[in-house]
Amino acid sequence: MATDKLRLEFIAALLETVEDFNDAMDDYMSFTDELVGKLLTTAEVDPDFARGYFLTGCLRLFGGLSSANLAVTRELPTAQAHKLGVTLRE
Image 1 (cartoon, helix red, strand yellow):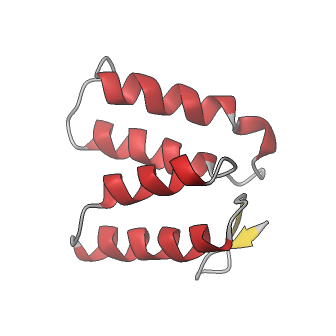
Image 2: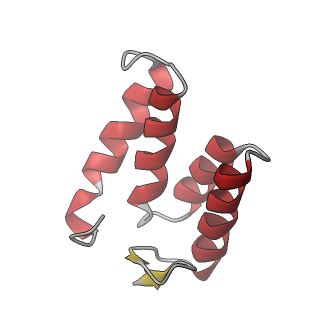
């Protein structure tokens, strides 16, 4: 179990995932850097980080991509495949 800088728990296998997630959220709030790529890279390295795939897919949808977009059709089902290991809040 990992804890982000807001002290909210999430599932991650690697300690680096916490730092990468916190950095991505800082980037999101300040409109800097490339958030989607950072979250996706972190999710690909940490097999337990379902939140990375979920947020990446959602951010693509929020950005105006269709739910039929190839990236979205890969990321959201991948998040779903990991849902058994997530916390209730996730």
